[in-house]
Image (cartoon, rainbow, N blue to C red):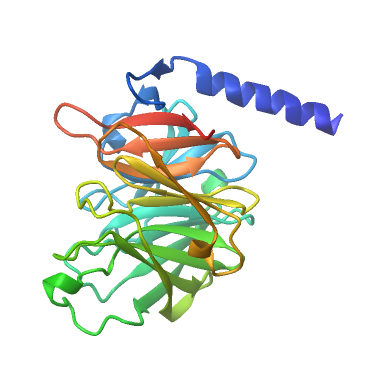
Length: 288
């Protein structure tokens, strides 16, 4: 009976994702929906295991709210997180205990000293409890550093085995596509984020910024998102994420993509920020 329930749930999820979808030309991205104006500056999404909805946040300059969206991208509810402040919210992550993590670590100018991740519980019931994970990056000494060394902006992270893994968005004037990987505990406190390793995405500064990350429910697949690419990471061991198998996937669709999450092991949801004439959409992508 339990197996049958899971099969029915899987069918319903697939049906929801299929309704009103539109195949875009020259790309494998599927346009699911145009997002509400309330989330036109979306900067991150995530999905809790076993739930048929996603959470979304907006970028800096917006309210400190988190939105619940159905799998078609329509808003179910808006939740105000009164004990937080949206300085520059950039990404969302989740763990298997029902916590959602909000990364307030956007750092365009590389001069912030107040980096924080909010750990939020109780979102499905709207009875939220919020704690703070504050940190600094172990190798940053100047705020800001010289322009050619500005690789301290963070817009992507994941939760894995009790820790948060942070990926930088390289803003160096001598851009070479290098994203740095840091690690901190996923519990309240004040930490020095340890630099673990680096990875060179590609050298096109218009297309190789890492803007979001996601991990599947089993912790076996990680994706990094850029404006036009995915980097799928598999077969990694412990902290050695970049020593695993890495596949570069061209989306053939350029936009300011800011958020990504797994629906299941092969289905991804992607969002881009809205501009005057384009963007502000929810897309679906199937990994081959």
